[in-house]
Amino acid sequence: MEDSFKALGLIDQLVETVRKKGYKQPSPIQAQAIPQVLAGKDVVGSAQTGTGKTAAFTLPIIQRLLANPKRPGTLRVLIVTPTRELAAQVEESVRTYGAGAGLRSTVVVGGVGMEPQIRALRQGVDILVATPGRLLDLKNQGRVRLDSVEILVLDEMDQMLDMGFIPDVRRIVAAVPRERQTLLFSATAPPEVAHIIQEVTRDPVRIAVALPTSTAARIEQRIIMVQTRELKKHALLAFLQRWERQQLLIFTRTKRGAEGLARFLVKAGHQVGLIHGDRSQGQRTSALAAFKTGKSDILVATSIAARGLDIPAVSHVVNYDLPTTPEEYIHRIGRTARADAAGEAFTFVLPDQFQDLRAIEKALGKQIPREPLPANMPAMPAPDPAPQPAAPHFRQQAPRHPAPQKAAPRHPAALPRTAPTPLPQRVSPPKQVPSDDGLPALHGFDWKVFPPQQRQTQQRPVPPSVQNAPRRRRRGGARNSRPS
Image (cartoon, rainbow, N blue to C red; front, side):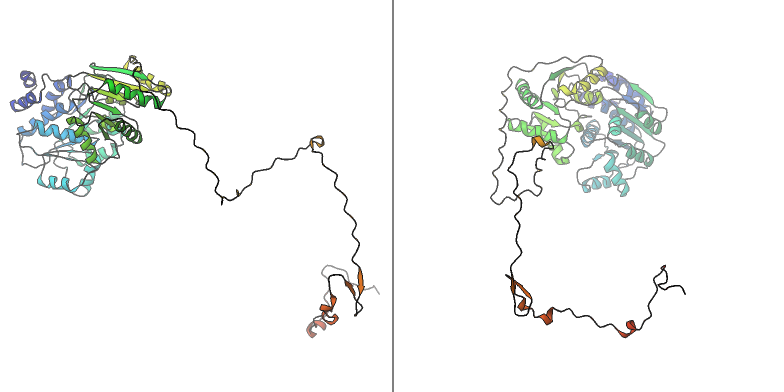
């Protein structure tokens, strides 16, 4: 083992570190990438997930820094990752492989306070691992300078493309020196990344040790067909009884779905951790640590945890929600069967997801075997009774818009038979009674209330100017006079 890694050009100090880590043989990506990185060339590498890409660039970078020492605390290596969890994992690998080398490293990510990260940067670092957003925030505030970077690493570049980090990556590349070494590693190499490779690298050495749509041969894959979402929950409980005392990583499509599934499993008596984008960095770190140490046997996560996380104890990966793309499926199931171990991957599929399943099988070039539902499935609870309408309140008001009434039929034969309407009776005029002032008096009204002198209308006097004014002719009319 030691001779194998030493044959790649690694120094004895790093070979001893690898031996303590437990590696027996270098993986294909390590065997091809380590000599090229030691030679100072730009490298674009793609390999299956879980094949040791992090060690493929971490080991030779540490050796290059040790071979050309500079003032401690000078930022010489910048590693950019898409997620906080991957950044923390890469920085842990840097500290593990660089133990005793005297190199300083730190990680800057979002979701946590900025002051501790600023204090670490003030003390000086040789290797900085960061996510794009927080790195640009610190750069814009003048807290970190990138003009001394010698090696730039872009890890999981395809995921940064999917997450919309390409504009941030371009800003970071523009801030580092042009004379540098650039390393780009990813599990897949989609065509969209080709433009970024041309921008950030110079005559790179391309290493592709496996097809982008291949999975590890040690992963046993199964498809579980279910009819309804409610049945999927109870089928998962039945499978959990079969997988007792195993480390399970369960993926959901949405954050809300992850929350609901975690509550369902906790109610069923399981120790569950939860990771998704809306959780704080402290909550995510605590859930991941509890899962790694065995305090929780199930970790429910969205695809945020599908890239780069190295958890050797994961024995089963469950796609509770079917991924929409073959690449996402490959990254999810790649969380098991790490470091020459074996693993199983189970995927639940609903009837309306057959097209996505066919796309995944077509990309893999094979049909995934089907797994029947277990016979020990718990009985599904009876559906809740339909809610009864509430009794009307005694102060309930009438509807503002009354219901439209049924229109009357048009045909005369369909009209209802009703009694004929009687003709109105002739009403005689009121009887007149002579009054004292000679005016007629009607029954029920007394004219005497208003004396005759008050009932006479008085004309308003005409002003003299109006009386003496000449009469105006009508416009357009003929003169009202006879011809002479």
